[in-house]
Length: 440
Image (cartoon, rainbow, N blue to C red; front, side, top):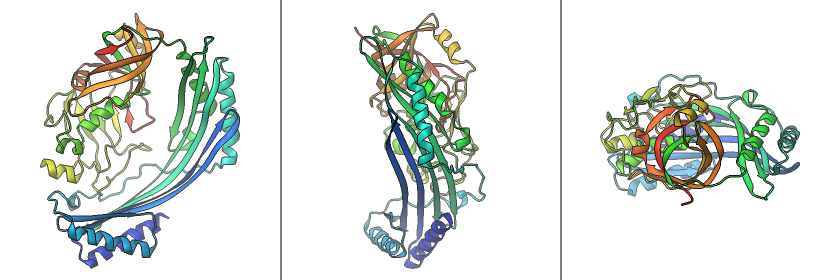
């Protein structure tokens, strides 16, 4: 399939040049896999996925036409080319439009070990899921129900090419298992939690039954949750959900928000925006990484770099379009940031709790209460109350609030309990002070 996609794209770009386009680019993808869900010992769903699509961009000087299609037949793609060409004749000129610079194209492919197909069938997966769910339910009498256990396996091919002569491909796989449970206490109050394992290679997935047991432990730990008093206190963002906090930082230094004047961090390169204990590194070349690639979505070569060093912002996250709008150069981030590694200050979570002494360990946030223009932050939260460095009881029904500028400046420690199941790898984060609104 990959060879077919490559030849299809290259033929289409050649036709665009023959038609008179000053430049052209196209990307195509093909993916297939399945998801199996089991709930309460019975098969809930079996879903097979097989998707393909192509997007073509044709440039006539500074005008562009963009067309997408899920039909990759020659007839359909010729029609796409005609439509993209027609659109490009009538759109307004955009001085920032165009391909990324030719000299920035990735010249050498890098093997990143992303492709590990799993030859499991749904029929083989179902008994594994039933066994894991049974283990979870039997592990604690307070587990009252299951929202399901799921197995997902997919593989994909992605190809990008442009009229500079660049053509790059990425073949990758993704496999996961998850378990979601409900627990009830003697008063009938219920809580929900989950656990999962995720890998490029199925051989390195955690044992399903152990994952299910952890899901049960997390769920029953939330029983008996209560609110707390309103006040300014230290907060730890647990490693299970701290990527959301770092995601707000990445969004604030991303080109689209910057050139639209929609970020509170515009104009901060070379300035201290976080506590000096914070260093973030972008590394696109991690073997089996979730955002690894030797080229970005414009063919630009990717490279390892410091995003934040000792609290000082080293650079933005830019594609060629946003870079031109800002008078800068692309950073090889068309398609978004690559693997983000947040350096630890050395403490495990227990040491972070001792350092905090008294405060809130946040394990879940809810809502969309973040304003990147001002940096204002307000989210519903749940977690655990900590006294004398020890967890005392679960907490729910509170709101944590502040301003991201202050929150970033008040980060005083980052744990070594790194969550590596996503493209942001970080341990728990201790923020010295936030406003927590509770029961009074």
